Image (cartoon, rainbow, N blue to C red; front, side, top):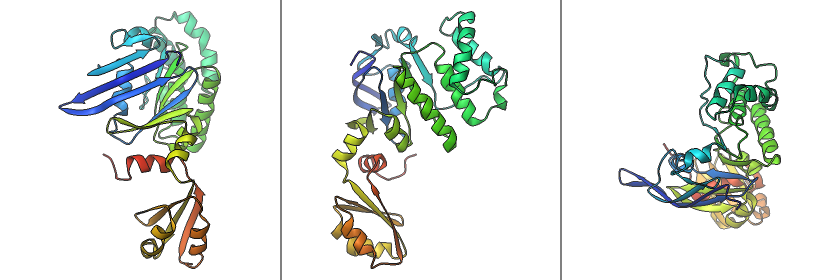
Amino acid sequence: MDGVLEAKGVRKSYDGREVVAGIDLALAKGECYGLLGPNGAGKTTTLRMLLGLTAPDAGTISLLGHPVPQAAREGRIRVGVVPQMDNLDPDFTVAENLLVYGRYFGIPAREVRARLPRLLEFAALETRGESRIQALSGGMKRRLVLARALVNDPDLIFLDEPTTGLDPQARHLMWERLRLLLRQGKTILLTTHFMDEAERLCDRLAIIDHGRMLAEGAPHALIAEHIEPEVVEVYGEGVEDWYAAQARRLAVRAELHGETAFCYLRDAAPVVANLKDHPRLRFLHRRANLEDLFLKLTGREMRE
């Protein structure tokens, strides 16, 4: 696994409640590894322990060859972090934000200045170096936070929900930049609530809930292992009656949530044929995806 990031048997409790219950993971150099889970699953606590910001109650962590939390500072020298919330300094310009951040790593100012053109180009902010933070759009700010995380030329990058709040155009541009980093040999640890994002970017991922790892592997392999290959979503007037009379008979697995019946199938033809006799119902026939897997393993109930 090349020793980029490894965790074994990591546990953490607060007030007698175990929020991380024996997490094991290992990142290979140059891969994008996703950490997925609903709110309260233990993702944030896990990230903080991996970075040495929170001490685990049990288990071992190695960050770029350094034991954590004992030598976390030495490990973080080669780590970049994109936090969930933008924390740019509004008193500085775009370029000044990058220059000041370089000081945290002890990088000489002249060296950071030499890196500025490349960082601004990477963030598609070539003409915005002298702009104030307040003048940037949400997408520009997120790209600047990503560029800032690259000031120290890190080997490993932590991305905590990097595209939350972005419009589709900004999300796709961010994905393009992340793929570029992977092609350059960077290693990425990604948390996200966007299943399509994880499916597009991640070489491997882990789904966690209640502090436990429920599944780990390549996205398409996990989908094939845990979910029937075809899904038919049925909705419209009378869907409850159709679900009770037909769905559970025709589908391998069927669920009714709100006004939609979800039918999971190996062959959708019988369900599609049946629905032709129910003109008041509408349906969507699609392939199973990562969201289906996520909901099967973690449930559909709301989390606070």
